[in-house]
Image (tube, helix red, strand yellow):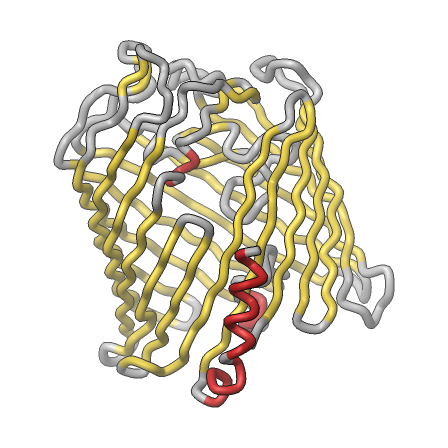
Length: 374
């Protein structure tokens, strides 16, 4: 219902917005685990961007389920420099901490509500064609509320966090800009993009939380992260494409607030088919995904194909054994269907059996709908 209202509102203003240089899109979807237990989450979003609205920069308004994001993006600051700033807030469901998964199964009573507000300034320096350096200086405030917790489970401290990052991006992608609108839940990539960043989170207040003493959530005042990612796509024939995604992360002194979310088949996680959305929360991982895309008809945009994802991560059992590593992976069949401004997505996945997963097999699915409203 919220998606219908969002699309309706965007369509109502489409004629005026188009004339004023705005474009908007909306989407909704759900990520579900079917076996060995039924769990799932949904999302609904809309996004509107006005080009050249503030100092030749863009204005962006974005809403996603429990998140509101307001931004001024890519304002020129002299030759080869751009400035962006955003304000974002997320209510109750931040980090999916309201649900707690362990070894592929949900453990009721261990989730809690998490919220934050964050100011996100960024400066980008385009040092050469396709090469960009960026500096981010986010300032965040975390807030936590009990949600029927286990009596032995301690919540993290409410805290201010300073989150500076230094990053590098190589971008040699030929996909049209429309592929990166919110309606395109899985953009079709042609070319290659690589990024890396190093950063630190400095909190105003830290304490051990969770099951105190297990060593899993015992952060220090400074939490370090080294991250790297790759996205690439190649056309291998009139009907065939290949895409590769890879993510690597190495963290020090982290906790479940800062660790990466692994599992599920939606755009907001490191994808592992078959596992529930955010089945794993890990700070040390290397996971890659290869997908083959086939067009049944040469001159039609519809695609179907196969995804294989796999790699390794630390503390897979979520028991505080941070130096323990194990494999993770899965297979998925998918469709990516497009008719004009509408996109429909469907995926069904199976997770590879491993020693740390309980009650194999693990099966999951994803459905999504997107529309370019104006």
